Length: 279
Image (cartoon, rainbow, N blue to C red; front, side, top):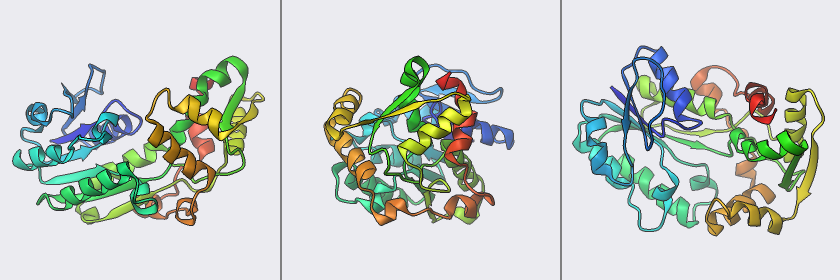
C-alpha cells in the first residue's frame, strides 16, 4: 500500500493515477471527500493532526508527503507526520520539498523545510526528496482574467524561470516510490526552458487560438493581490524569485529526464493540456 497525501492537488492527482495504473494499492489522503479512480482507497484526514493519519498508514509500505499551507506556518511541526509514519512501519518516504531550500536557504519557510528534509533522512526509512522550482500551474491564477478579459496581469513580464509541469513532478514521485534506484536521491525538477510571463501569455493564446493581452503589474500591485491568499512574507519571497532569479533558479535541471527517460513537458504542453481552464 502506498499513501499519497495532498491527493486532490495538481501533483497528487496524477501521482495517484500513475500508481493505480501501475497496479499498486493506493490510499489517497485529503481533507475533503473527493472522487478517485476505481480501486483507490480514500481517507479524509488533516495532516495538522498526525494521529488522524494512523488509519491511512496502517499496512502502508510507502508515503508521498506533500505539506498543506498551514503546515508551513510558524509553530507547526510536520516532522510529527514523519515520526507517525515511521511508527506505523512505513519503509519509504518521498518528500515534496522546494528548490528554495538550496537557492534561498535562509527564509523562514525554507529553514523549516530543510528541517523536515533532515527528519526524513533520519527517520530510518528509505527516502527520496523532490525539489521543484516554479509550477506551470501557477498560471491558473490568470484563468479568470483570461476567460473574462483575455488579459494576463503579472509583474516582471520579461524575466522568466524554467517552470515545471506538476504532472512531471507526479510521475517522478511515482518512479521514486516504485523503484529503489532512486533511494537517497535529491532531484531538482524544472521545465525544459526558461519562460517569461509574456512568453506564457503567448503560449496560452496559442492554446486558445485567440489573442491574449499581457499587462505588466508593478511589484506593489502584484503583492497586494497575492497577499489576499498567502502570507506577506511568502508573497515577498515569491516576488524576489520572479523579479530577480539567481543563476541556480535559472538553471534547467536534467533530473526529470534522468528519472523519466524523456524531456520535461514545456509550458506550451501544459497550456494545451489545461486550455479548458482559460476558455
